Structure formats: structure tokens, C-alpha cells
Amino acid sequence: MAERRFSINGEWAEKAPEGIRIGLTQGVVDDLGDITFVGLPELGTSLEAGTPAVALEAVKAALDLLSPLSGTVIGVNGAVVQDPSLLNRSPEDAWLFCLKGVPDDQWRSLWETADGNKNSEGRLS
Amino acid sequence: MTPPAAGPWNMAVDEILSRSVEAGGLPFLRFYEWKPGSLSLGRFQHPEWGLTPESQSVPRVRRMTGGGAIWHETELTYSLGCRTEHLPVTGVKASFELLSGFLLDTWKSWDWPAAWAKDTAIDPKSLGVPTAACFAGHEAYDILVGGKKLGGNAQSRSRTTIFQHGSIPIRLDFETLKTLFLKDFLPPRQQVTSLSEQGWTGSSAELIRVLQAAFVQRTSAQWKPSELSPDEQAEAEILVTEKHSSSFWLEKGNGSVRVQGPAMPTTH
Image (cartoon, rainbow over all chains, first blue to last red; front, side, top):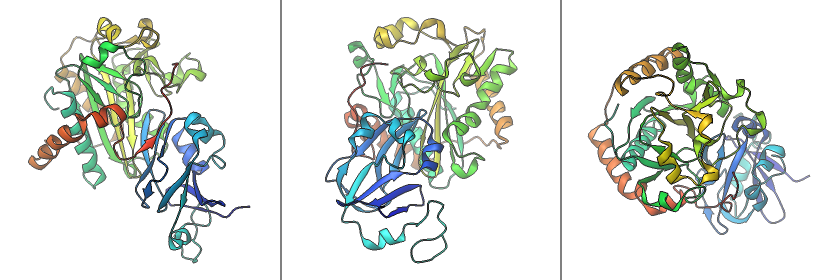
């Protein structure tokens, strides 16, 4: 199983062969409710951690999701753009975008568990 | 309460107030009106979806909040903003219930048969389906009076801040709506209502006083009137020019995220 880690804001990040895929945890999706719009970053976009990356609308609430990691966007999941309800039905599989060139220290600073008990360096969060 | 103003100014002031909250400022509740009447699009709404060619020639803005288009003319609009830590709830629906509750309380206090959409006979499957016109759709926490939708509410959220807009129609001008929305996207006339249809004859100032008191009671907030500072006024003027009157924002709504969105929906 691919290695998966979690951000403080409730995104998951998973090492895939081509890069690191980003998605939303069940907790975030449950909090949002029915997602009706997804806008993903353009391929080739250079993202900084903590800057807006994904546009979402759920239950008439519009929000910009922040990228948990820095890197270059090398892939986007068009399926969730065409059918945003995939995020509600299967958030653990429905990735949003894929980054390449993520600094290793940023990856290591993510949590090992979704509830954020500790990161890989053993620090309590 | 701010004086009736053009759409871009109204949107810019909302954004300034929202930024202030995000930066640690006090929560706010604002009431305002529109002059001239304007069409507002939802944050990610396609600029042509469900709208007539004639609608392209009326004043137009794009809201920070989600949902569908609204014609603002004979209405009172409110906006409010707070940090997530100010609320005892976290979910979107729960926050709508809390933050829109003052409206429901008010209509009920007038003995109007008001209820959340989720508590009415509306088909639960129809709740949350996106619509080009805000008033044509239903969310769980829309307010229905006698089974008819009264106004609409929508939010924008960041990690730390919740901003909510709401439209409270004093009167509904269906003749104007027919010129703005394509026939298949118009809210069905028998499914929407306004304050005047329900018998309200007071002034905007009276309505604001009642709603403000209901908000304080529902949220236990303390009320302190305030005005924009000169710096905030100046910032709002810049936002009017650089964002809320710009074709970039009006056409795509790509304020902070450059995104590839879906194709324009073809059905509602």
C-alpha cells in the first residue's frame, strides 16, 4: 500500500509512482457536505505550501483549498471535475492533483495519522 | 447599515470586512441595499449558465459566495463574517442553521409558517442540486414560508473564516426575472415568496432593527455599530476597480485560484 500522510487541514498526501497525490479525508468531506463544484490547478502550475490550489463549492459554500505541499502540478484528476460527488462517495480514492518536486522536509512534516497524533519525527502536534 | 450602493462597491465592502475578520478583527453583521439593481453570480457560476442574452447588459457582479444568480433590487441584503472559533459548530450545514437562524426566528415571531426546507415536504433528493438561479433551488437550510422559498443564503469559507451572504426579497419582480433567466431556469412563481407577499409593509430600517435584535438573541452576540475606517474605504475603492469591476473576475471568478473547471452545465 502506498505511503500516505495527512495535513493539519485534513488533506491526505500519497506517494504515487509519478509524484505525490493530494486528496481530502473523510472528515473534511463529511464537514463540507455535498460537493457540487471542483476546480483544479492548471498543469505546470508551481504551488507553494499554504497557497490556494483547489476551488470547491459545497452546499452553496465556496472555498479555496490550500495546497499542503509545495511542488509543480503534473497531474489532475479530471473525473472529480466532471463528477464532484466522487469526493463524497469515495474520498480516500478520489485524488485531486499530483505534485512533483515536493521538498522532503515538507513531506516528513506531515502527520502519519489523520487525527494528527504525531509526525514522523515523533513530535506531538 | 450602509447606504444603497452599486454592486461592485457592495461586494468590495463585504470583502474588506471579511478580510478584517480573517486578520483577527471583530465578527460583523452588515445590512445593505443596491442602487442600481444588479445581477450577482455565484462564486464559480458560469457567466452564461441559465441567463438570457439581455442579462448581459444589466449591472453585474460576482459574489464571494457559492450558489446561483440573484437579481438584487427590491430586497434587503445582509452579510456576516466570523472566525470558525466563534462558532460552536464546524460543518457547513450546521453553520447555515446557526447563522441563518435569526431569519427563521423572525418569520416565526410574525406567525408566518416558516420552516427549514429539510423539515418540509420537499423531496430530499432535490436538496442541494445546483441551479442557475438561486431562488430556483433548495438546500436543507433554506427557509420556506408556507412551502415557498423566502430569500437565499450562501457562504464562502477559508480555513479560519466563515462569510455568509443572504438575500431577503421585499418584493419579487417576476417581469424583470423573466428578462434575465432563460425560461427553464426561472424559479417557479408558485414556489417563491417575498416579505410583501407575506404581508410585511414596514420600512427597511424597521426590518433591520427587527433582524438585528433576532440575530443578537439567536447568537448571544453583543452589538456595536461601526463604520468603515478611511483605510478600509480606500481599500474598497481599489477592490472595486481591480477586482469587482474587472472582466477577469466577472467572467471566470478566478480570484485566488487559477483553475480548470467543468464545462458549463446544460441542465438544471
